Amino acid sequence: MLDTLIELAKDSSSTKRHQLVDHVTELFAARAHKNRAEEIATFNELLEGVFDTLDDSAKQKISERLSNVTATSANLAFKLAKEDLSIAQPFLERSQALKDAHLLEIASTQSQGHLLALSKREHLDAKVSKKLAERGSKEVRKSLASNLGADISPEDLEKV
Image (cartoon, rainbow, N blue to C red; front, side):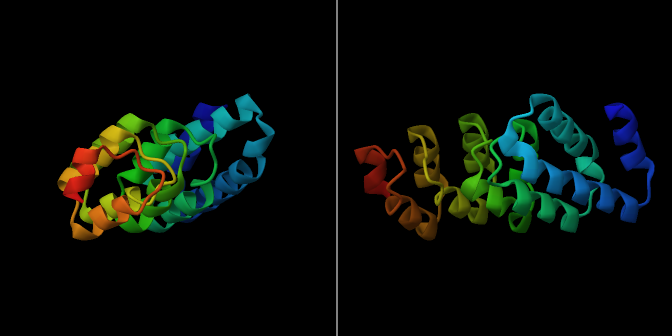
């Protein structure tokens, strides 16, 4: 059934795909806290399956609605976090679905805007903090230094 839904979403018009994604995202955000594993897996798989066919406004809605949903798959979270900053920012700043390896890759490869959003996370491990101190602009380093949840070594703190 899931494969059929994904194919339907891919083959349907942009308007229909938008409606389907809106509906699935809304349901996902509303029901994720109930921990229905099968339902959560279905929502994640559907959104992952159609993600690359979505326009930026649909991706933006997903990002805004799911950035605080811990049941979002790591794969979907990582896809959202690598998008343009306007889409990625909610996930970069808040999503607990992003793994430390994802955060480190983003800190190593993405724009200063992405780095600034990362520097505002509630918690940053030492490797990510180090990369932000190395690559970040003055604004990123200042934000990192003021982040009480960032694990920063004394050496890296000197860089900021």
